[in-house]
Length: 386
Image (tube, rainbow, N blue to C red; front, side, top):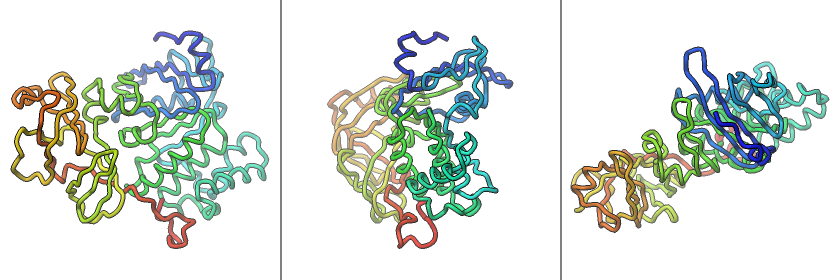
């Protein structure tokens, strides 16, 4: 791998600078470059088996490189050429795993205080630091609970507090929301967004969910088969995919609206139109996801089972191999994919008037409304926000 230039290392002295090369026992080889400045959130987005867990192991110090280097906050943590390897306990990396990994024999307060205590901080001071983070994350009322008394969302917030209390040089979040239900994910995503913005160091979110990546990250790194295939802002990745995986997954349209009785009013700047959805029981603010391939394009108003049809124009066309990606105009700007054959048959070009249609069952729906918290008297004894 090409090493970074000396000035590039200096520019990222307070951030993460990693060139990762490892061949696992099963023959899988990871070769990936990650550079994240302090104060920035990057997402590592990829399918299962892409090598994301291997990246976590290398950055956290659970695995050692075959080649390359890991530099963080001006320190070299791993460099086989100089026989340098800093073990996990000395790396100052805060890790939040999807399965929490809390100590079952300790209460919440002592779980969070464990990090400072392991670094020699006196018990009283460690507990004071823990109390501070429990208060910030809305967990003060659960300080003396054991992990098995917590909901999934509460346990994940404890794991986040435990990672932040040590004031790490890198915050590493490994699929932090994947094990949670939909309502809890929405609530905890807001918590993460708040504390990621306040964390001064570099942050790396490991995920297979493009919604998490696009909502939480400043920059997205796409990992496929052990290689970084695309790097860019969420908008760049969404609108200019470089591989079929990115086109299929990261190209999903993300809309915000208000749901009532099976109808969602999409709100500006995402558009201005009502859409029928399959779920009639959801009421209030929602997030909608819509795959580009789920939208059909017609020159005349379509007939059939689609409940959502509207007239628009083609604003942009981009060729992606045997497919074509177009961007529609108002009243609902969307990214849509069609085959090259369909593009020719329909005579599509920039400015062409078209009808778009989508079935209600093709629209993904999740709540985006604040849930009661432990500080809300109406919430009762159970923290339904997770």
